[in-house]
Amino acid sequence: MKKTNKRWGVVILIFLATSINYLDRSNLGVAGPSIMKDLSFSKVEFGILGSAFFWTYTLMQIPVGAIVDKLGARVTYAVAIIWWSVFGALTAVGRSLGALIGIRALMGIGESPAFPTNTRVISDWLPTHERGFANGLFTTGIAVGAGLTTPAVAWIVQTFGWRVSFLITGALGIIWVLFWVSMFRNRPAESAVVNKEELDYILTGQAQTKDVQKSNVRWYELLKYRNVWCILYGLFAQDYLLYLMLTWLPTYLVVEKHMTLIKAGFNSILPWVAASAGALFGGYLSDRLVKKGWNPVSARKTIMTTGMLFSLFIIPAAFVESAPLAIGFISLSMGGMMFANGSSWAIVADIAPAGTEGTLAGMQNFTGNIAGWFAPILTGFLADRMHSFVSALVIAGIIGGIAMLIYALFLKNDNPHRQAEHTKTEVVS
Figure 1 (spheres, rainbow, N blue to C red):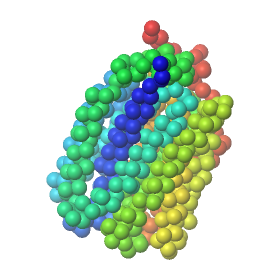
Figure 2 (tube, rainbow, N blue to C red):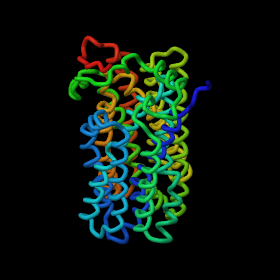
Figure 3 (cartoon, rainbow, N blue to C red):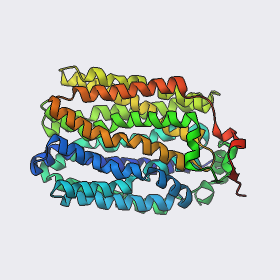
Figure 4 (cartoon, helix red, strand yellow):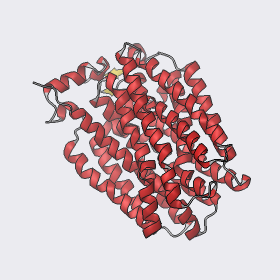
């Protein structure tokens, strides 16, 4: 019997969830000029509002990773997306800085399980040699949700007002949940639509330690691994650039390059198209290296280091006067960052002790999203005080350059999966 390919349907579902996730986040950035004008917010106040989401989102990362590992992806994702969609829509009723900060903070709680859940799904549903592309595919949802939808959201904001845009984007998540609960099961063996040939293909392509489903390894014990520290800082650097662009790119084009909101919306597409291409190509290339016999950690490391090298193009973007040239450099930087990003998530399953994939993904996302505390506020502060975005963009480049060096010099082939003598696990038959 011919092998089914239902695992890719699962990847498409989490791609759509990621797209909705980032659409709900980025809506604030697109509506930024209108919100600032309507509610008389300064750049600093808007930066604080942009950061509020990440306060709770970040703090929730370590506990939600453990929750995903305990409850499974099906229930966790359904509850999470309903929560964040409701509070995303409630942004429309905010009429003061304090109210909007509270709403965005509550929305951050709902969105917190997304990436740990995605990582757990990929770990459970994909063989090792397909995880790079699968992670690249779902991370393109970042670019689709945050960038490719920008002109449509800008049109809604300009035509119907910024409040309507939050109501519309909030409704999309509720629709997705209906498909999720009807189609997804936590493991391929539990799905009625996966045939034996596909199930055998998935299981034989996974590490033997996948037979170990529970682990007694505590989250803080993961910190003894050098590789863990490397990927924690690496995602921080990627997220710093990502959240700077997510919060400020349309406003940067309106304020710094004197574009209309609609024109800024269309010009915001190119960096996110580059980001999508980078994510897909990076994931595909890392899988090709694994199939050719590369150690998975070495393959991911090569992609991550190369991607962060290209992210340095954000520095020349800060100094050019031409808007098209600035957008071109930003696009190269975003493409490089997302080239690295898919492998940054794929490597979690390569280095995590079995049964701790969700926990390590949560730790990585926690550290990465600390960038969300600083990037929006610091960018707003510097833009307000310096009357330009130059220093904010240069700082993002320096942070990315440090990540490139850390990946290149300190990320090694050590694999806790193989260090059974250092971990105590409970084997489930």
